[in-house]
Amino acid sequence: MSRPRIVIVGAGFAGYRTARTLARAARGRAEITLLNPTDYFLYLPLLPQVAAGILEPRRVTVSVAGTLPDVRLVLGEAGRIDLDGRTVHYTGPEGERGSLGYDRLVLAAGSVNKLLPIPGVAEHAHGFRGLPEALYLRDHVTRQVELASSDGEGPLCSARCTFVVVGAGYTGTEVAAQGQLFTDALVRAHPLRKGMRPRWLLLDVAGRVLPELDERLSGTADRVLRERGVDVRMGTSVKEATPDGVLLTDGEFVSTRTLVWCVGVRPDPLAESLGLPMERGRLLVEPTLQVPGRPEVFACGDAAAVPDLEKPGAYTPMTAQHAWRQGKVAGHNIAASLTGGELRPYRHKDMGFVVDLGGVKAAANPLGIPLSGLPAGAVTRGYHLAAMPGNRVRVAADWLLDAVLPRQAVQLGLVRSWSVPLDTASPELARVPDGRERRETDTASGGAGAPSAGGRKAVGGGGGDDTSRTITSPTPEPVRSESAKRNRQPAEPAEPAEPAEPAKPRQDAEPSRPQPAPTRSSPTRSAPQEGDR
Image (cartoon, rainbow, N blue to C red; front, top):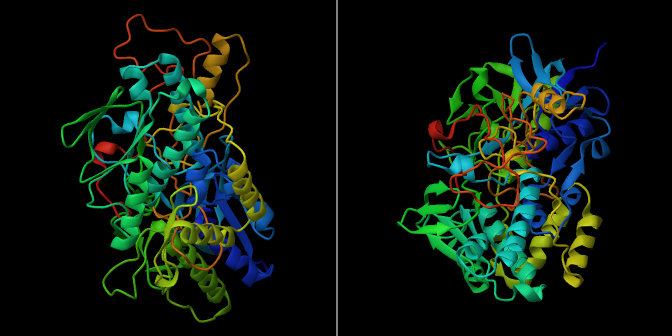
């Protein structure tokens, strides 16, 4: 008798937890396949520390093959899902196409950057949803400080040392907090930079920082940021973005070369392509996480609108703690559906929140007890170590080294600006030229062409802006957001020629970047969705 086939789309918080729960319950009696564009689970809560140079990128990634040995990993981006034929079609990393048949399907496609119809944002801002974006920001901030030190005093130096973060939720607050410490360290460590004054702005239309938390914790975060020198402006956002800066809604123009977009997330467009009942871009599911009318299909994480049994008539928010817990319930229910067991509904109980503000500062309320300062910092780091599925010793070692050694302030140049556009359906993958464009470039420079990696649709897990800062059972995980169309990007010229008269050049050290091709999610059509911070 053949084993039942279970396909899980996405290896984020929801998908990874589902696979782990199923592998333990099935014990080899089912064929479990995890479809994801990357071979790792990303622990998103520590991503700001990667951008700030505290942790190395591999520290926040957990190998799927290494931690889920009984789960078959298929690298690829999900495209079309044939519900009647019970088949998932995908594109592999080298352009090959394939399909996976299933008896049970788990949709954990996660979320992508939320775009708003603000002129210039899609062209000049960068999100913070994956490793490529964090690595780019780390290099970009380092480069701006280095260029500013060579420019000397003046408007250009000031613009390079000004960094604007939009969105005062968990991600934006932590990026601004860690970023201020990082740039201060870059200036302090170099005697020729002592006159430079890095400036971080944190903007949000909300009335206070971290509006999801109670006012006491929000006030703690606000106070730490302001004492550190972050310019916190609530009730203010970006009206227009240009190559030279941003125009704020209060009429002020801020000269800057850095705009980080952390306003929230929206469900992965893969869910909409199925033609099933939706709730603000998310698949409607029953409390057991089954899709109505499709008992063989389960959905969890940011892709699913799960009824909140604690608040009748509402749906659980798009947060990592819900995605992580829903993954466990989904794994149990799928196993039960194969053996005739009882399916359990999804219920939750918040155990608290943790927000890392850099250094020894944090805000936390474990079990409802509000903490700040060193105790909150200890609880926050202890929680992250307990929650990670792996790499605990390596993360702790990096924290120890950061406490006693200066950070390595170098830019590696591995991720270019054009390869991490804000308007992308696959933030976990850096954009690359497709095969045709790569061959044209190689021919022009006398080389042999070879197709490059690329996929049609990235698939992911769950977890909104809070990215598992909420205290839950140990072992949260990363989010994997994706979409259904491959973004095409022109190849970088072998020897880019400088335009004769560039209009308002940004004077970056980066080479001219090709304009990103439009993706499936246009910022001008993007309506606000759940997950906004």
